[in-house]
Amino acid sequence: TFSATPNASQCSIKGLPLVRNISQLPQDNYGIQGLSHITVAGAVLHGMKEVEVWLQTFSPGSRTPIHRHSCEEVFIVLKGSGTLYLASSSDGKYPGNPLEHSIFSNSTFHIAVNDAHQVWNTNEHEDLQVLVIISRPPIKVFIYDDWFMPHIAAKLKFPFLWDEQCLQVQAPPKDEL
Amino acid sequence: TFSATPNASQCSIKGLPLVRNISQLPQDNYGIQGLSHITVAGAVLHGMKEVEVWLQTFSPGSRTPIHRHSCEEVFIVLKGSGTLYLASSSDGKYPGNPLEHSIFSNSTFHIAVNDAHQVWNTNEHEDLQVLVIISRPPIKVFIYDDWFMPHIAAKLKFPFLWDEQCLQVQAPPKDEL
Ligand SMILES: [Zn+2]
Ligand SMILES: [Zn+2]
Image (cartoon, rainbow over all chains, first blue to last red; front, side, top):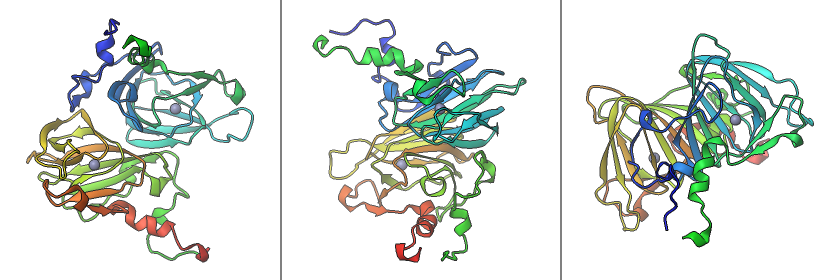
């Protein structure tokens, strides 16, 4: 039998055209104020196994949580500017005070595996739009309340916000099939 | 001893800023007419292990070779338009006639592992600019002379054009160290 979840069709790869118009893909803030997230090519939505691509827009003042993950991550800034906070000494018990790096339109940077980081639209006049590429999807995120929370206390969020609905829809108990 | 290759400094990750201006990164056509290639984040240049990102511009009429690779590949069309030729039935002895898909600004598509494909700027009025994301870098490319060349006759090109110089510089014989 088919599962009758209201948005199941949004989670199915079937019927998706090979070439997709990014402006027509589903976008949502997934409960993060000031965020617009689009999964451009994803594990859960499009069957990717090794890479995943997101298009994200942060309104002025909005930001990611302080977090780490054991995948590689590349950012490409398409519009706007902001600040990358990065605590790259992973040898301590907690991230500690991060270094601040200015990010700007047409810039790129990548985050090393397990470095705690946060991307913040610190430009009050303009949206910050980034393309984000991660390896080993779907992403498993460890979230810190602040930069002095111990690494071992950071909370795992999996599936992450944009994968929640469809990971559930796509993995029904086997005996339902 | 240090190797005294003229462009060795271009191949070293040392001294590269964390946040890099994409317009200041090295670009070259690597012998492919009409191509401009920039490695935005790469295995050889930037120490990436799981993903690599390129910014490529194809002048009107220029194109990739017909090729396949065993990594995943995602395209995002930033400017212009063109045609994706894709032979997705990998069960035959050769790719065979490909399907033609129109690609356009703000569109995305991905290439399944080992599918033979070619991206062609078939718009004679405008450059085609794409962001390309691959997994498992550096890329190993198998090149076909035409769509009816047997899969087993396709020629391996590794290191690929933009990785050639620096892969050599970075991997000197062990007893030189
Ligand atoms: Zn991250
Ligand atoms: Zn390719």
